[in-house]
Picture 1 (tube, rainbow, N blue to C red):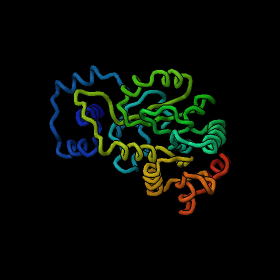
Picture 2: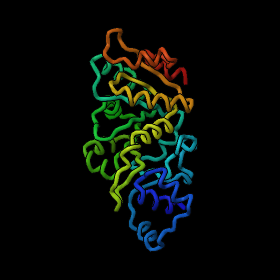
Picture 3: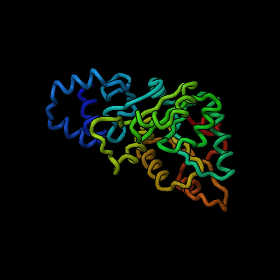
Picture 4: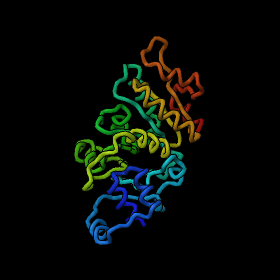
Length: 257
C-alpha cells in the first residue's frame, strides 16, 4: 500500500484532494507502471501508514499521504522538542537580536528548530542553527529534489548537523504544481509537526495569521516576542493582546512546556 500512495502522490503532484479521490474511487493502477516506479524511485519517503509517520501529524487537517525526506527522519518523532519558528528575512536590529538571543538558547537546550523554507534560505533562525550546530527540521513547498539541487551550499552546511528536510512534493513525469494550496498545506505541515509555535518579528502578516490560527485550532501553544511601541511590525503585539504568551527569553518557553 505504501507504493500505491507513492504512485498517486507523484501522479497528482501531492494534491491531497486528488490523491484522496483516487483512493476513494479505487482508481486502477497499471501494474507495470507501479513496478517500474518502485524499482527506479530513489528518494526516501514515508507514508501515512508507516510506523515512522508521527501520530501527532495524523491528527492535523488533511495529513500528508506521503512525505519525501532527506536527513534524519527520526527527528520528526521528537514531538515535545520541536518548536516551529516561522520567521521572515526582513527584521530590524531589534528583531535580529531577539532571534539570536532566543534561538541560540533553545538550540543549547537541545530543542529542535522547525523552519519553513522554499527559495529564501538566509533566514536568521537557520543561520543560528547552523552556527551553533543545532538540530533543525526544514519543511518546503518545493519538490524535494529541486530544493536540494537549488540549495547545494545549504545542504553542505546541513550535513554537519542533525537535520531533516521534508516536502510533500517530488519530481515526477507530471510537472504541474498545486499552486493554489501549497502555502496552506505547508503551514498545516509545520503546525502538525510542532509542539509549539514561536513568533518572532515578521512583516508577513497574512502568513503568520494563518499559521497562528491553525496552531490555535490544534491546541498548540503560541509564544510571541513583543514589539516596541513605535515598531512598524504590528502583528506580534496584536497576537499578545488576543491571548498569545508573551516571551522575553527562551526560559519563558522552556519553563512552560
